[in-house]
Image 1 (cartoon, rainbow, N blue to C red):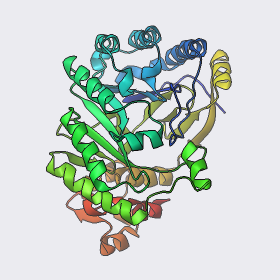
Image 2 (image 1 turned 135 degrees about the vertical axis):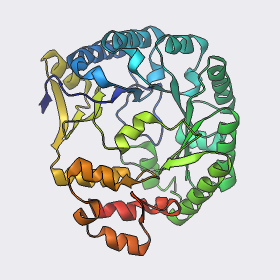
Image 3 (image 1 turned 180 degrees about the horizontal axis):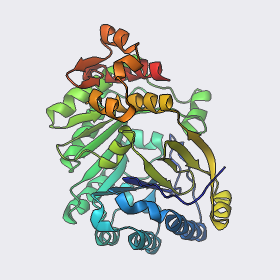
Image 4 (image 1 turned 180 degrees about the vertical axis):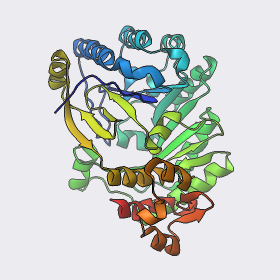
Length: 381
């Protein structure tokens, strides 16, 4: 499958960097450990893709560079990428510019470059402060590294710092994870993304589970963990705005809200996904094919799906109900020209069962039942 030059506009741009210094035991994203020469070639081709799609960048409000580990690029290469972006995009229009980073990649030279090019949000892959959990997850940092990184971020004026944390690693107790939360907040996190550990296929942990060397947490115990996390973060002044995301007021991730609001966005780089003109697409997750596609003047895709109106309405609900605020009935009516409840009659049953709440203009999953969201969302598949 191929995709030619884009003419459509979108608010958000995602750029995928598929390189890491080492491979974590739980990660199933497209990534690799690579030589510098391959990283350099990749950035050169990424800049070519940016040129191909630049005509659609006029309305961009957010940029998100993820991976993999973007901070694993050497500083000259990272600056080359940021400079190339700046040549195609008016950074003055960008409201939120996020870069994912590992704690032990944060240093003064990196932060000077990020400041120079307007990066104003850092998503830090902490996952835990527990030495035991970090060993299981095969992370390359420790608590001291995180404390040093977050102090340096504060010194350089990066106050919009998000921290990823994983819970449900084996039979960990809640006190361990509460300590992770408290340390992240103490060190300056304004946004927290606590994720339950999901053992994906083609990961190290999946192999260990098959060998009987690692055991997943009981789902009922995970649910109790989640409820305690909700309560604790609320007490700490963090508002939940999505199933796995909590923020101090004003620090919600604008880029990810584009996804959950079912709005169009660009996905650049090998393995990256995008959503344009009611079509979801994924760039091929193979560097040789990615390079050949760009050389041919087109982009090779591993997947493309054009959504019917019914598909679009289903996705509007599945994505929108991930948010605590849910879905606006008026917005749905304006966007699709039909009444939401009439379009999905089984909503009435979910309302009577208490899985959904309708209040004024908003349809949403009660916050105490967000952990059971799959039982609601499966109705829209």
